[in-house]
Length: 246
Ligand code: G3P
Ligand code: CA
Image (cartoon, rainbow, N blue to C red; front, side, top):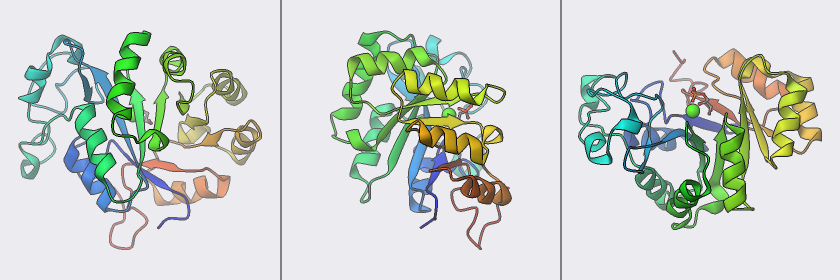
C-alpha cells in the first residue's frame, strides 16, 4: 500500500477508458484506495458517469448528456475511442458503480464529483437514495466545483461528507474559507495550488487536502512532502516499478 492514499481518477484512466467500469475495476485491482468519477444527469433524470458535457469525445455518439435519455446512452460504446481492446464498454450508471463499490472486498473511497447539476433538493435527494441504499455512507465523498451543489447535498443530508474543488488561480485562503463555510471535510485543489503552507492552513481549518490530478512521480513525491492526505491520479500504480507513468 502507498504511504499516501491514491484515488484512481475517472478510474485507472491512464491505461483504461475513463469513467467506465473497466477503468474502475482496474483501479481497484491495481491497489487504489479510492475512485474518483464524474456524475451527470440525463434528459430523463438518470445519473450517469461521464466527464464531458457531451458524449462525443469518449463515445461513438453525439450530443449533450442532458439532451440524451438513459436508453440512448446505454447504446453508446465508451471504450473503442481509447483502444479497440475496450470496444463495448458502456457509460455506467451511478447505480452500477455504487453497487460495484459496495460489493468490493475492501472499503474503497468513492469520490463522486457532481457536474453541472441544478442544485435542487429533490435531485440531490434522489441521488443520495441511489448511493445510500447500499449502505456505503462512510465511503462516499461528494465533491464539486459548484458550491451550490454541495450546499444542496448538505441540505438533504446533514451528515454528508463534502469536498470543495478549486481551480488553479483561486486564492488559497479564500478557497479554504469557502470550504469551511459549506461544512466541507476536505478541499480538492489543483496540484499546482498545493504548498506546505496551503496544506498547513487547510489542516488548521480542519480540512483534509486531496489534490488532483497528479500523474508525475516527482510531483507525487512533492505532494507527499507537502503533507496531503490523498492523491487523485490517472496512474494509481505509477510509483510501482513495473510502470513508470505516461
Ligand atoms: O475531481 C478532481 C478532478 O477530476 C477535477 O477536474 O475536470 O478532471 O473533472 P476534472
Ligand atoms: Ca472529475
